[in-house]
Each structure stands twice: as C-alpha cells, then as structure tokens.
Length: 281
Image 1 (cartoon, rainbow, N blue to C red):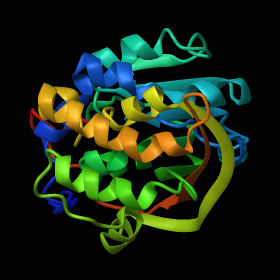
Image 2: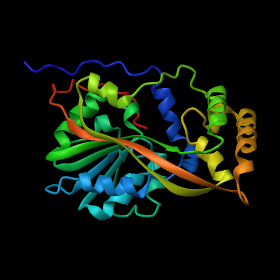
Image 3: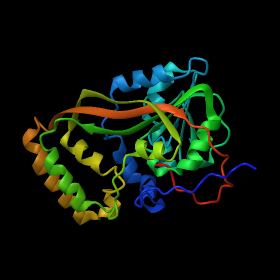
C-alpha cells in the first residue's frame, strides 16, 4: 500500500515553545519594523506564478507582506498563519483588502488546488516539513512552483560585526542549531531547486528606534522572554553601536534577501495528523 511520510529531524531549537512567541502582541507590534523585501524580489515572485493558474498562497505569512504585495499581479491571493494576533494586524495594513486571510497552520490547511505559486517567507523552518510538502504537492498547479525566502539581511552595515555577539549573548534560545534549510530539504528528497539567488541590495531608511524594535520581533529576542531589565540593556548596547552612524536619528541601510525556488518532488501520502503541530512562524 501507500507509504506514510517519514519522521524528519528538524534542528532542536525549532520547537512549539519558540514558535509561540509570534502570538505575543508586542512581538506583532514590532514585526513591521523588519526591513521590507526588495521590490526586485516581489517582481521575481510575480514572474514565477504559473500563468495558467494566477493564484498564490503565502504560508506562515505573519503580516502577509508577500501576499499583500503580490495581490495586484494575480487573480487570487491567500495568506495563512496560526497566529491570530498576526492576522488581526495584517488585515489593517496597506494592500490587505484583496487578500484572503486564513487562521491555520500550514499542516492543517484544507484543499487548495491549482495554486500557481506557494511562498514561504522566512517561515518554512518552523513547519513540519513532510506534512507541509505533502500539502503543497496537492495544492500546486501542474506548472506551479514553491518559492522559499530563507532570509533578509542588511548589507555593509558597519556595526554588524558588533551586533552578532550581542544577539548570541542575549538570545533566549539556548540550543540554536545553524543549518541550511534548502540543503536540508534537498537531502530529505523533498525539494528540487531550480535556482537560488540573492536579491538586492536596495536602499532602506529606518529610525534607530525602529531598528531596535525589529530585533524584538524575533523569537530569540522578544521583550516578554528577555524581561524588562535585559531588554533595556540590549537596547542600550545596540543603540551605542548604531547611533554614531545615524543622521538625526535615522539610518541609511541596504537590504537584500535570499530566495530559492523550484518543484516539489513526488512523495508518499501524509500520515494521519495528530493534534498540536508546531505553529508555522
């Protein structure tokens, strides 16, 4: 008979507890301070949509930046996330009105056939990979692709070498395991990469206060888990690093993003779902 999906080992820090931070209202309030994705990336994603199926879905969408910005290029844009707080905030943002918002983990999404593109923007690592790929395989149109945005970062920020030691010092995730998501998915026989690309850099201007807030939108540095005293110390130390490079409280930045896209490999049917799957942000 049909084989069930195998159990795959994900890095040990990708736990339900660490993912649940994205349900915290303060994290949600900080999330929009993350740098926007480069415009070139959005144009690339639009070009990847199957022209025979002008529908896209963003999984683990957070504030749904990709879905909101892709909506003008397609006939239907859907965004799904398990955090109700994220979705409530997303619905108030520019470009939200045409998007269909779904409160769900990716693993628990129902049938959504003939999607011309599925996008996971800095979210796929949190998901159950076997179940997510089984769902995506059933959802994509014959010409559809999966696009995985694995990160965005600032390029050539002079204070960057000093930031990372602070992040490691203050992080509330103590068992972090570095890994290459795209390589791991390939090793598991799930994803056939057509191309990987770094997009950008594109200029971006941000206040020092907004830059600080962007760090507190991360699972490892939320103010709720850091505590008030550690949060204030972190902010003081980061401010000391970046303020010499600011003009009237503003930073001139360059942002770039890393993306891979391709086809989902054929695979076995999904096992029966059990409750309590890991949230997808």
